[in-house]
Length: 248
Image (cartoon, rainbow, N blue to C red; front, side, top):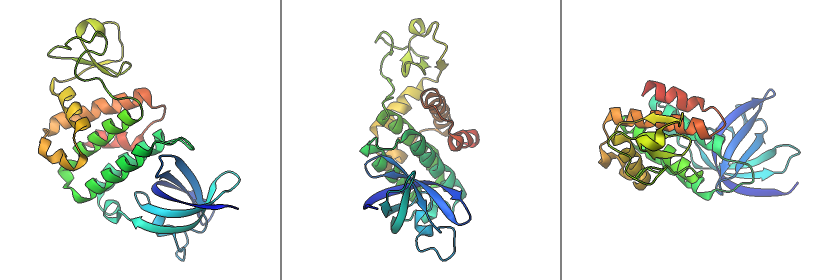
């Protein structure tokens, strides 16, 4: 078997047999990798703890018949604090769930890895009351990278002004005026501030989100819209996002 080394972000682990794990990872080039870590559930495992969700690891892999096989694992960033705090683990779980659902084997999108690891870094060093806006920023940036950057300045249909109380078309991916929204069953009514929040999140660095001082109620409405937008375009249920938005 030919071995190769990659840096990867662990997204999920699944039990396999009596002592093995299947680790779903996002490689540095943005490709998804699923690999078997043999014996990882044993207390004597030399690399099991290094492959916990949210950890960044340099892994040595060998080609298997259906899944790759982990032969070595060296920790880069453990993100241990994310797994030991209830609020942090819920926010981080949304990041991992989204990356798992949108990443594809052998389909590179290098920006996803940097977005995911940076988001986890920012969550780890931020106060809990900032987690919702960090998650919202991650989601809208992630959708933009996935090819669904929302149109927020003008009506996505006619290019004109969307009005004081715009709708948001999930199908068209942007704000719509009253005329263009007629007959579009995917249109959701949003508060006037939501498009401005989404635009600010897209343009802001994750480390600078606190300065935006977005009111909690507006953050919640933004998250609800993003949940609907993602659900419309990503053909997989994101349970972590569903649970997170419900409790924000």
